[in-house]
Length: 162
Image 1 (cartoon, one colour):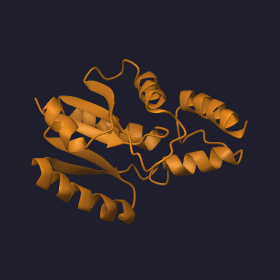
Image 2: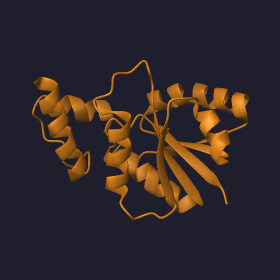
Image 3: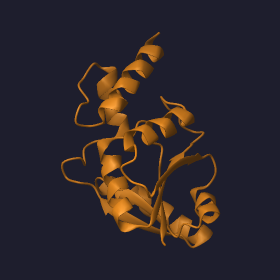
Image 4: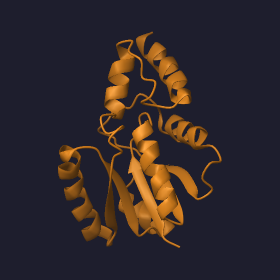
């Protein structure tokens, strides 16, 4: 059984992320959705909140998906769980340029291959940053994130403003 890892900050998870995760679940025996904690970023949601939001959003729909987090190297996580591939969704050319270097580093560090999945064209404009920016300015993010994420986003932004 091939184990794949889909790492990301998922702050918050978007419909684009979910599309990539669901497609991975059809391709691989086991998929680990890993909230990668980056000390250089200040997320809106805590690590635990992001994991919980993803678990709630995915529910029981895919029995071969594991949701977790790490504050270390993704390659170390891959070694620990026996993963042989990292899967990254690509939205536009800038994503490829940014991800290619990391893919080469990951292969050098741990002999882990990276597979790129192109975004669904309907979803390729969506990013966590865009979702947060639109929501912060009172815009409607329906169709960009699941309804549960909208609820959590509204609560987090109210707390941020207070």
